[in-house]
Image: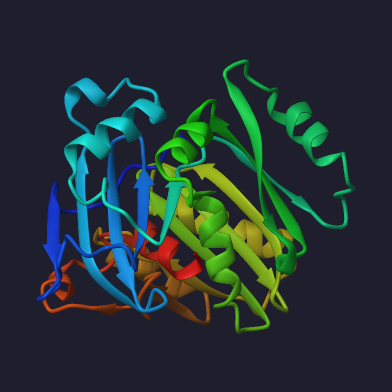
Length: 289
């Protein structure tokens, strides 16, 4: 099962900045970097994250495809001039290779790690890290590549490191205004699905899918299993054409909308040319940092 989402950019390379952006004056800005299996992207924000002044994305060079995430980070700092600048804060997002959601009703201090290891088995080359989601009454336990946290701290002492699933979960919590709501996001052949009821996270799952019909099946099955008969569904934008999927979901759910994390951020003229959802993860990382 593929659990490492692709970059999702329709364009192979993105390199845009807002008019007047000074790359030598970044000490008061926030840098949000997202590392994925096939590529990377990053955004630079200012004004309490409400304005994005630069964004870049690209696929890893061939020689970086098999490198450890900490080695990729070192390469990125050497190759991308903007990444090596001084910032007020740095946020690094990593695609979770595997994760499980532990509801507060089940979670007890000291048992979360045991639950994670009993389900997934701990690999020798990884350490466990927790992304606390207290306001959703849940905690996400996920595996990070061993050594990455130390590598980030070494290069960015003020940095925070998050799983992308954890970032999007926190972001979606602020958007769950309906009494019952499902959120889905397609990443190549992986479906991420969230379920909320009265602004409490009920479920987060990762499923392998082949077709749009598979997405519809899992969405309907989740609604039935959790008894969310009145739930609407929201499709998270990823920068690819999803019209056929929207049509399928609209036929089965009374309310179907699309959401692009980061839409509330102001984008400069050049950045506004970006396809909707092209930098979803980096923008979401800025929103919740």
